[in-house]
Image 1 (cartoon, rainbow, N blue to C red):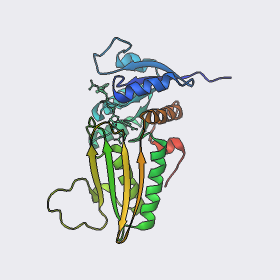
Image 2 (image 1 turned 30 degrees about the vertical axis):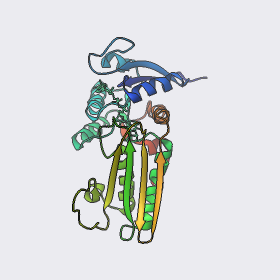
Image 3 (image 1 turned 180 degrees about the vertical axis):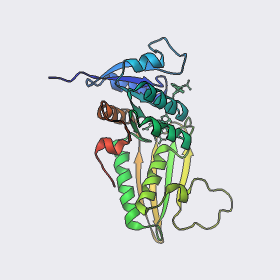
Image 4 (image 1 turned 45 degrees about the vertical axis):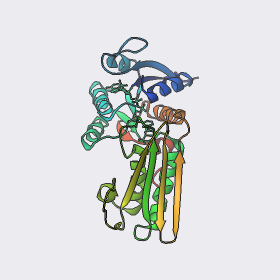
Length: 259
Ligand SMILES: NC(=O)C1=CN([C@@H]2O[C@H](COP(=O)(O)OP(=O)(O)OC[C@H]3O[C@@H](n4cnc5c(N)ncnc54)[C@H](OP(=O)(O)O)[C@@H]3O)[C@@H](O)[C@H]2O)C=CC1
Ligand SMILES: O=C(O)C1=N[C@H](C(=O)O)C[C@H](O)C1
């Protein structure tokens, strides 16, 4: 017998990803677009309040801001659901702690990238970092995004940085070089460098270079259309519906396991 569709609420419905998500959910027979909501007070024209939206949803998909996502996670935990798919990036430590606390009560999939290809690349980068080591191979991460993006480095760049750090068995925060300017001194071995570009309509480009004396290995990913983030978020929503509380990521959803 056919399963009833999973009921989806979309948070940040008027944003770039919110609009993309609504179209993708409407086109998917496994899902029902139960409600769309935006900022508090922003109702009408198909938008309802957050409380009304959550009351009719099995899963809420949120691409908004770090503060709005953390607040939404707390609110869902307090009311005992629904499960969450969180796509926002740029969280600070307090916001991440709020989400981790909420995940004790509700199931949450959070990822800096819902791209399948990018999550595959994360595994490759971790393995390359482990094989090459930090002494002879310097790791540099580059990302480019559209002119509207407000956080840097991107959530995806930080995921790639975590993969390099994990492959080397170190903490990213201890070795990350997020900015270089002026007389920086020579590059210390083991540093993980980030470089950021912003311009025009670039949807998202990422690369990781491992640079040794005499050779460089570069792996990269380019996003051609935001629809693939929406499809990844849908895969996460289908996976997280009815799941036990916990904080999960796309590698759990895709079954990629540890790198
Ligand atoms: N994980 C992934 O795969 C991806 C992640 N992202 C991330 O998703 C986030 C959103 O990206 P994007 O859609 O491009 O950005 P937008 O700025 O287009 O959309 C975000 C929307 O959230 C709205 N918003 C702000 N506060 C609230 C609130 N409290 N409740 C509901 N809505 C609110 C904003 O409203 P207003 O317009 O009124 O300010 C805005 O429309 C970013 O952090 C981005 O980095 C983006 C793409 C893929
Ligand atoms: O803001 C965006 O647009 C994107 N944000 C995510 C990130 O910070 O990595 C994912 C994607 O690259 C698009």
